[in-house]
Image 1 (cartoon, rainbow, N blue to C red):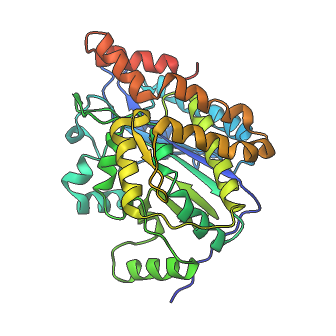
Image 2 (cartoon, rainbow, N blue to C red):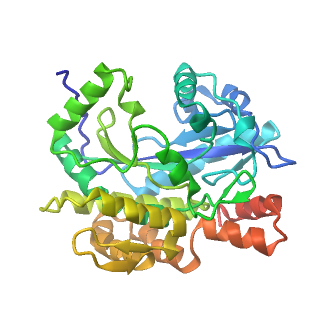
Length: 368
């Protein structure tokens, strides 16, 4: 069995990835301008502004950060440069997890061998996959801790999804879900909430088996909602929709970092049943913060807002130690005003079902 090296982190470092839509300035439809944008990215930012699955989106990512304040400064700088390049090409940026009315069949796959290979395998499922998300990496000190945290984080994934929902529309249709992205993503192989792993050896054996059998080419092809990332020495939370405001992105980042720290200090490693976790995720995807959450051990039923409030209070001491409470304290604000999905729906139905007007209003809210 080939060993997989986990590049250990010195502490709970942070890395954040944002997948951003590129729109035509007049119609506000998805526009395949990523190749033009990427040509104008300066060399020092080539690793920070990257191509993504389709040509109407790009990814920006931070350097390795120690604090949420560093994440804020880093993301603002990179986003500002990306926005300048986009404006220079007559394009605009938009942050949500699915464009509300562009057609999936109109999108062009990026000129990257890996993406073309994936699309060739996924066919219609892949062509429908025009989604964007927020991915947060948190550094952990060793591989066994990564497995322990990965297992326990699964309990809280539905709450993180409920706090970030931003994909209620798909191809001009109200899907009836607050996160349609979450359900589209589950159609992909090796996606969704993962099974529990006993230890690093079991993870290594699984990856080796998947690679040997040709199911995956590398660990990058494992698209779980949360996964260990051996190369970066992190646990990567991937379940989140892309929040519609910058302050919400920072709040969720602070919440995830504090949660990982809290779980690292937790002695017990409970084993929830996967069916309860999937049910809770459905509630988050379908109803967002208006759904309910079932305690996977005692069966007690909470509102999703109660579960989010409990999570916020649970990690507050860790956030205080990390110096990130100013960011974490935006979580109650999300609970008060709800998420991007709710705001999108209110704007759409309150303004004569006008998607273009809704997008323009959402853009104005991003840095407020």
